[in-house]
Length: 100
Image (cartoon, rainbow, N blue to C red; front, side, top):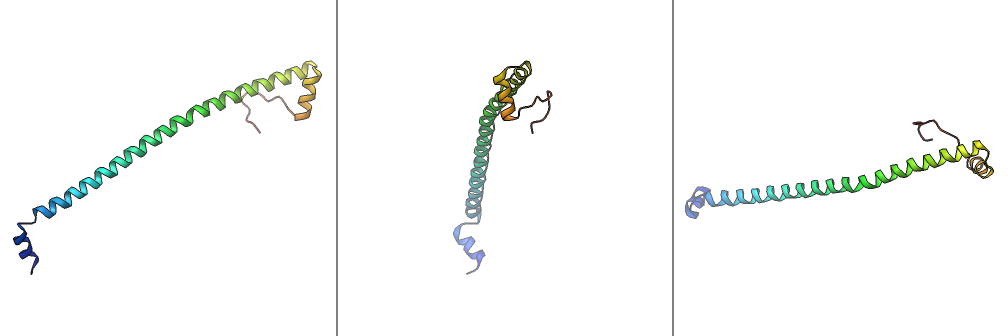
């Protein structure tokens, strides 16, 4: 039995091609849906990570201000401040200087 005989007996080639197209379209839809979900998850992760980063920057700014005040206290002669500065080897850094 030849392929052409099988096609004539089954009523044509339309149904197999239609089924193949339906399968390909459903697969494409599924892949696009997965990409959309992954994009949404990535956006959510970036948004969630921004809050702790901003909070860490605020803590760092406040800690630098506190250390600056401690160094100023030590320079003014406060014995406790002098002891802390010497114990932890704290030095005054110019504004904008990178952390070691």
